[in-house]
Image (tube, rainbow, N blue to C red; front, side, top):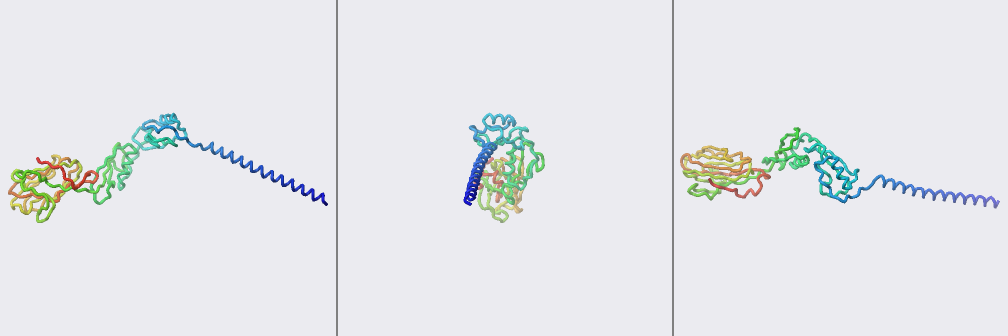
Length: 327
């Protein structure tokens, strides 16, 4: 009876030892397998090393020329990525790179390769900055044409030349809404009274209505003024007529020119409704106003006389005086 128990006990001990050995061996195999897997993954996913050089300017080079230059600096061939880019440059040449020229090379490099430029997108309603970025990216010359418009958001695109859908060219002209800027225009108070007597600036009355403006009595020789606009304005607005103190038989010729080109040439009569001015002065350098007596003697009043332009084009302080000279 005792010998059977002893045999069973030895059998249990042997089985336990075998089980322990089997379990221990499994852990070692798993650790070895993990080590092998980690090594394999490290070999499959190398980490790019920082290149001890700055990014060169590759613009205008071919893809092969750019690759050769980068590899020569120590860049791994696998770190060079190619992306198409619409451009006016020769097809297949480098337009731009990421990172840009002069930046540190720390990882992958993208070469933007020039390709054909598609038709002009429809930018109407977008902000002008979107068109400018589009044009700059493709090497297209961008020109803004400001259009005073109080009903649209400042900077809103109203149209383009070429128009949307047309073939893009080397230039794009963009009509842009700009919040109108008004600059008061007063006749100079520095004129010789013998040349243009009783010149006044301030509140005047024309046809019984008060205006902020200027009044001048031309005398027999008439009066002339010139104003420097510097291509910054689009329109001249206001009214012109006789002040209420003028003689009833007075007639006066009013001439307005932009760079010598006639814009207004009209004889006005006392007692008639004042002449409403809305003169196109776009792209003008010099504005001239001339008064010439026709009959009688009276005082001409210019009410609410203003130059109207876009905030972007006009610039400066709207309350600053314009340069004025006399002929």
